[in-house]
Structures are given as structure tokens and as C-alpha cells.
Image 1 (cartoon, rainbow, N blue to C red):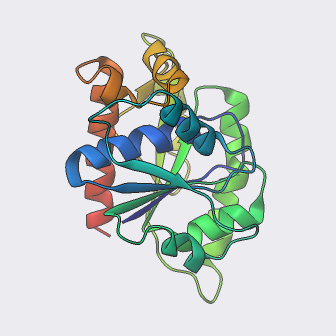
Image 2: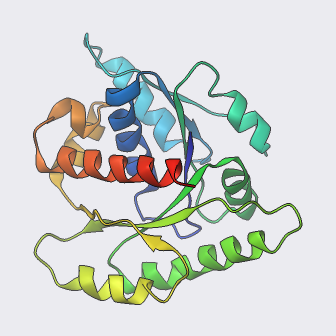
Length: 218
């Protein structure tokens, strides 16, 4: 399975989600490749921190980056020998977004609780709809994932009401803003590695199971 995290709006937590979902997948099936399509290289930097803080028993998650202006075929080739590929697409880059869409078996569109981010995400929704009108379009499933929401705030349901106007499913599980994500990232880890029984890890595992079910049902 190739899972692409895409949003032309930056700051929605694509890289953090990509890394943590990849680790949750690796818990289930073994080797998982993260393909970093973001020029900022957030996932590659995470891997460098991971190598600086080695420890036995880490989950088999590795990060690679394709050549500049990659094709979907080049993205897929990076995952050879791995059970799954997780793609982290760059914000603001239509070509990269289109490549990630073309390669994917399932597209995940992270959205935060900010009204600015919700409005900015509409550009990506428009791109998804336009790509499906193309002659080579595939009916790749798309799911919206609420990310970085504040615990015990009402904004989650308000955002869900807004997103229901869009023609895509909303993942049942919400990922909340938790310090566990930042703490794990500092040492090149995922939350399922640093606090496997914590709330962040539980949310990531639950969301990952839902994503797998959606991909299998396409």
C-alpha cells in the first residue's frame, strides 16, 4: 500500500503524521519506507536524529528521497522490499502533490482546527477534484484527517461540520495536539516507540487501522 499525506496548505502536520503512521504500520507488518517529497526534508532530518540516538529494537522505518521532480514510478520504486510506503508531500508544490496523488493507493488530507488552515485546504480539495476529471484519473480514495486539535475544545465538531461539505470521507479518529509527538521527534522516534501505551500512540494506532481498512476497501 502507498499512503500519501498531501495538503498544499503548510503547517498541518503532514510530516509528523507520516512518520508516526509509518511506525504504527511497521509494528503490524515490518519494514516501511517513508518517501520524503518535501524540500524541507523534515522526515530525512527525523531519520538523522534517529541515527544519532541509536537503540536496539527500533521499528523498521526508513526514509528516502527521490530525485528532484520525481515521477510516481520513482516514488513507488523507493519502496521495493517494504510492506508499505508512506509519502510526505511538500506544501505549496502542485507538481509534488500531483505526483503523490498519482502514486497513492490512499490519499490522506490532514486538516487542523484553524479556520485559516481549513480555508487553505480547499485549494488541495480543488486539485483532487480536478485530477479526477483528467483522462488518466484513478478513483483513488481520499480521506480527511483532523490533526493537532486541542483536547477538550469544541472546535473539532465545528471543523467536522465544515468538512462535511466536501466530497471526501472524514476519518473517525482525531489526532490531538500532544507533547508526546514533540518529545519523540526530538530523538528521531515515533510515539509508539517512546510511549507505546500513551494516548498519542493509541490515537495513531487507531487511525492507522482505519486507514488500512479504507485502502483495503477501495
